[in-house]
Length: 364
Image (cartoon, rainbow, N blue to C red; front, side):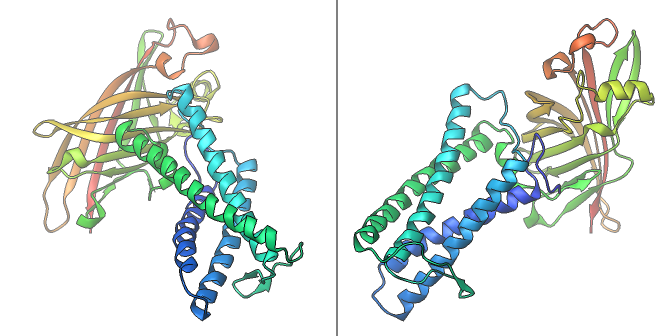
């Protein structure tokens, strides 16, 4: 897992900030309402102190995330989304972020105006910049309560949009923040509850076939990461996520490889990874399947149906073995791989065929 973001997915640091802040919000909201109903006494006092400390921790995470975001921009939303949805996503994000900052600020002002200590887990106190002020305290109480309901509404919108993208639109927006346990070279596994994992062997290949000056050539990607959840008895519940290191391409010609990595082709420096995400796998015949998903190359995403053959050899002693093979033809123009002097197809043909050859052994 990379620490930094790239153009297609969030890095480990951004995910840690996001899910850490999310966990705190889901603790703070019910805790606030619960302690508000408690009678005055030691139990309420302890809950209030925990609420203050967790609120300060949330503020630290949000400030840290803001600094990280300033120096490490998040991945862009797919250009395939309509303009109104791109605008709504940005507005909801900033509204939620602003509401959380206002909520924490209102809570801190409430504590100070009430002439109460603001302790961080009992380690140290945050000094008050204001004097005790009853009218300000009542105002901040009302603001704190109102902002809680605003945050709940924005959270429902944010979560609802993420689930819509994942289950209805079937793109990778939610997956970019969820994170996955990826293994370089690929890995095939079934659902954790079934405790069966497949390890892709080094003999596995990810190839691309193209035509240059009317002659056929084949290249390959030396590095890719994959997570494939698949049960042959329930293929419709399967999921595929493959990340390809574009700089690892190799066509056995260094000059051609440099051109392919250039801004007029894959632009591997700006777009270091390509991704294929499939949320649906269809069985079309015994041993034959189709992975229905989205292929993203550079900053362009296109729907793609990848047919593949799968053979599983049962071996109780040494573990089962799986072989998968498939191919699909794409247009390089559709993915922005025909720019500048390479736009014409007289030297490099428009059609490129992607081929997978996977060999996997069941992990014991």
